Image (cartoon, rainbow, N blue to C red; front, side):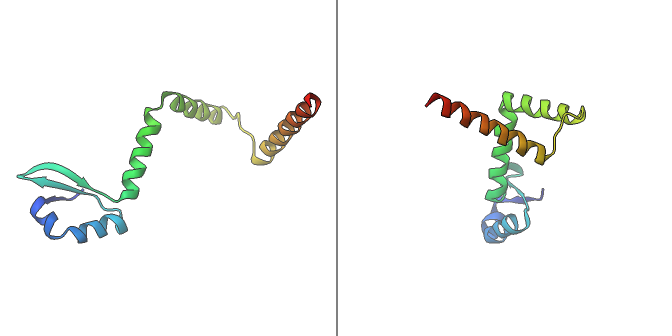
Length: 101
């Protein structure tokens, strides 16, 4: 990640914003030789926040790990079988609802 000083960032802000937005560049902005800010595209920032949300959700991470273990163990089905199972469940549910009416 390139480092630019605050004075240069102020002078060429439009250029750096365009590079962040169009090329995915990130810039570390420094003041008096110390890092003070990062410039990145909004899309990248939003993606980073989403990633942090996922990583901080213990249940979701446990579910992802369980899914990865299922894949390694060969406990998978193709999409056609999944659709058949979902359709069968939906028919069972609609049958239960019709009996209860």
